[in-house]
Image (cartoon, rainbow, N blue to C red; front, top):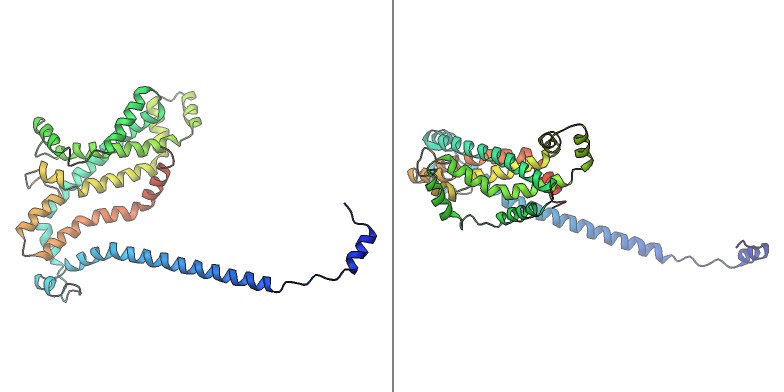
Length: 308
């Protein structure tokens, strides 16, 4: 409704409303309070992250520094830097058995990664692409595999591997590690496959692409982040696994690093500097892997958890 000239004149003659001078001051005070709370929260989060980083990184720093100390300094100067840096501890550790354990772990870990990625991605492709009652049963069976505790299956696995004559071979570890990493791998890759648009698959079928071609040319190239995530998780498990490596392998020639370090400690129980040097050598590959691939690890886990 438009105002008439008379109404406009009344408005002009009406006294001006008093300006509330307290409101801007109150807004400024509230804004300062909110800003202060934000800064306090940010600093507390930063302090918590620094504390968490210190708890994680300081043991690694202590291990590296202590590996360069002599026997006396490890006991008499626990927290200080070495007066003389004994780099020869690493050469001694490498020459006294760590090299063999290192390459055994490398072979077992790489073989496990290859089998887990191949079998896991194919199984995930089948579980994500087809719908039937048996597919649902297979999916439930796969999820149940995640719940299986390694300690529960230790004795049955030992009996099975003995019957297959695989005890004291690398395949005893490789097959066991593959069996334990497959359920989680299949679930992660399947969740990622479900997010791939169906239009790509339909276009490939129109162009005459086979089922394996769809898997190899479309699904696998698009799944690099989750594949890298699978590689990192599998490598971390296979490289550091201790229980199966100790029970299934007796020969010192075939031992991996986690179980081999136990013998290494017994043989050199008085030389902790050399033992710690061996532990540093065992840690370096996983640290390098996580540093270079942590971006793909976070991305793959976040994208793989969107659908399930």
